[in-house]
Image 1: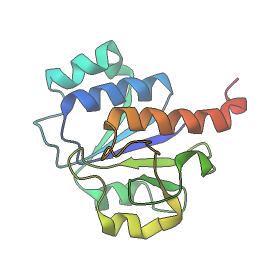
Image 2: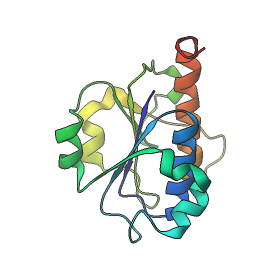
Image 3: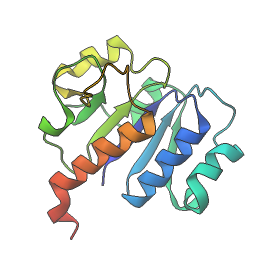
Length: 154
């Protein structure tokens, strides 16, 4: 359906929770190293992913260049960031799109965001919070993409 891309995730429980969501939506989960924890098979990842982890389409990459060598960059790559004004529900998503989410402590790097400014999306907040939890952010964007394309999956 869609591609969820986590760049250098730090918290294994978030990765597990996002993996569970990816399985529920038939998305591919792309994990780009280095991680802020040991290996992806750590028990915290599996615990949050429950018994879905072994059925999940999850792929690991050594770095962003390795990822792009296997998933060429184009305008169907969207970057979740607090550094844009375009809200996520104004973007038009298609099946197969890539949704990038950055490190929990730093977000996506500026040089990555500059590659496709039109593809940068934000989740509005009514208070002055810095950001939402990454698992919540992935859920919000992924379900909006599903909503826009739901007729293809009925």
